[in-house]
Image (cartoon, rainbow, N blue to C red; front, side, top):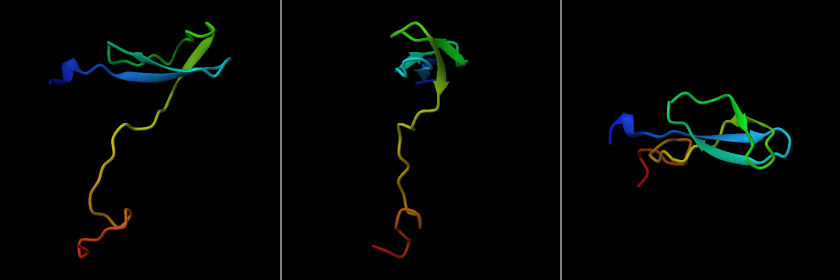
Length: 68
């Protein structure tokens, strides 16, 4: 799958009703704001949690290379 096939999904939150929704952006440039599908007020882009976890050996996650 090439990079041209990636369809980024961005999260937005309505400033009036607080509704959070996702929107697929086809041109790879996220819109700063859009219209809330719930109440038709202004919604702004929010930073959402990552959907992946990096696992491995590290002191932060309680492992060290000497442990088995």
